[in-house]
Amino acid sequence: MKMSGLPNQSCFKPIKPSSRRTSISHTKPQSITPRDDHLKMPRWTIHYPAGAISRDDKDQIAEKVTQLYTDLGLPAFWVNVFFHEHSVGGFYAGGKANHNSVFFHIDHAARKPQSEEARLMFVDRVDGIMRPVLGEKCMKWEFNVYDHPRDNWRINGMIPPMDHPEVLKQWIETNEPVPY
Amino acid sequence: MKMSGLPNQSCFKPIKPSSRRTSISHTKPQSITPRDDHLKMPRWTIHYPAGAISRDDKDQIAEKVTQLYTDLGLPAFWVNVFFHEHSVGGFYAGGKANHNSVFFHIDHAARKPQSEEARLMFVDRVDGIMRPVLGEKCMKWEFNVYDHPRDNWRINGMIPPMDHPEVLKQWIETNEPVPY
Amino acid sequence: MKMSGLPNQSCFKPIKPSSRRTSISHTKPQSITPRDDHLKMPRWTIHYPAGAISRDDKDQIAEKVTQLYTDLGLPAFWVNVFFHEHSVGGFYAGGKANHNSVFFHIDHAARKPQSEEARLMFVDRVDGIMRPVLGEKCMKWEFNVYDHPRDNWRINGMIPPMDHPEVLKQWIETNEPVPY
Image (cartoon, helix red, strand yellow):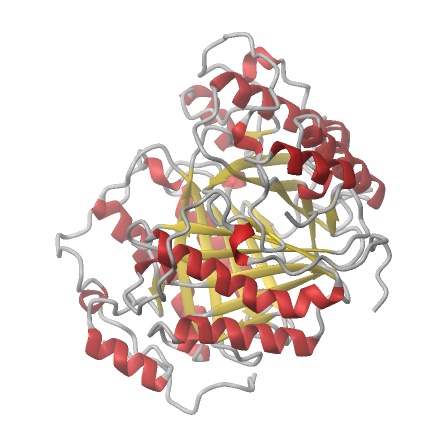
């Protein structure tokens, strides 16, 4: 696909992890554990100019995003991914209606601050999902993670069973919000 | 309406209030008072797969949501409700493009923490608005409430007259942001 | 354009700055400095009923919004502006599907609380961008500013070079996220 507004330059080179972390400690990240409290109620919202992300790309991204959280012990059906396709005039980047930018935000609902290690590992995984799709198209991609309180989170009126492991297990196995 | 991706199961049963509050105290909720500071600047954003919510449903939901806040002494025109209908490929739940999920978030602008009683009463009212519409369609519905600061809230450039009861009364009666 | 639901009244009069600040101190606002930490990662999301904002309006708003931030020393390509046009049934104000309301929120990513002076100056500038477009159409406009943490903000996987002035200068001049 040829996009108007695409800058005349070669694609951005892959960034080495070290250069991405210049302002933070170089402690070796440890894997995110299933106990990571910060990744609850995941919602990804991806804004892109029309044509920049294909249906196949979206299937692939949604599958990887879902797996990111199911690997941590969350039911798959908790993971919501939204794609907003914008026609020209719906998404301006740098004041321009035509551009090669993708913006997305990730909303979580957490109880306490996340460890630095888990946070950095998570950010790396996010980038690892989007880079293969967007990098080879010379897109620019920008994201942030927004944290929200968890108190008022409800699924079918129920408090998600974080404090009821046996119910949570049932929700994971059936992939449904079984009443409890 | 038959939705592809609808799970083969009977509808979720209504949940008794007691089971929804297993992790919190069982203090009897008191009614939300007009002084509840936490429900200002209400905005509901409801994401649903195409066809899952009808125009009649939307009229009904928007009316009930508005009444929820006007009962508390807010001008009706402060209440914004957005419905985002997603065609297949715009909203993935659990990695699936076809599903029976509705996700919505409620954004408020508050000054101080809300009492537990008012918070729980509010969450129950939210569920009472959505359950009649979504429950009978066997939809899954998930929501959270996001809190934001209120300092920069403006309507037509004016600070909403929370500290000017006589102006607020005028705004309520005219349902317009009368200059003050 | 004639919009159904438009109230039978003359346009809202311009509000004098003094009347907009009744609940805050009357300290003379100083200009926002390039060091203002609170205006990073700007994203404007503007919801409007179909027909209320033209393509020309959008071009003009996006340009002014972008300049608001580039004046502060941010690269233009950091500024994202989204316009969501809603057909009837997608945006209810006060329970009504037909209305003359525009709602927008501004999302930033900041490190520390903003000074009162800079905050008020910013709010005035926001209003100065939207009032010429919406005021003469007798639209109502409402907004708020949402603050988010900045830790997980990434552009092409890189931490935006706030702590690397020479890289930031390069990003501004090329208007691209040059790898570093």
